[in-house]
Image: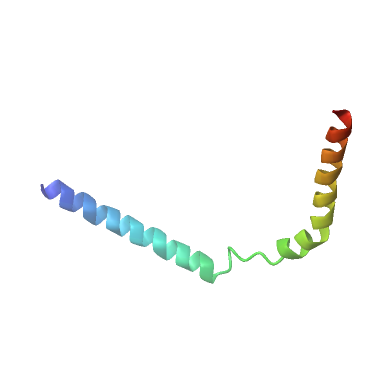
Length: 62
C-alpha cells in the first residue's frame, strides 16, 4: 500500500514539473506565431481556386 503513495507522489511531482515547463515556454513566447496568419491571408484565395478547379476538372471527366 505504501508503494501507491510513493508512485502517486512521484507522478504529482512529474506533472507539476511539466506544468511549470509549459508555463515557462508560454511566457517566453515559444508558441507565439506572428508570421503564419499574415501569410495565410495572402494564399487563401489560391487554396480555394485549386479546390474549385479540381472539382471542375473531375466533373468534366465524368
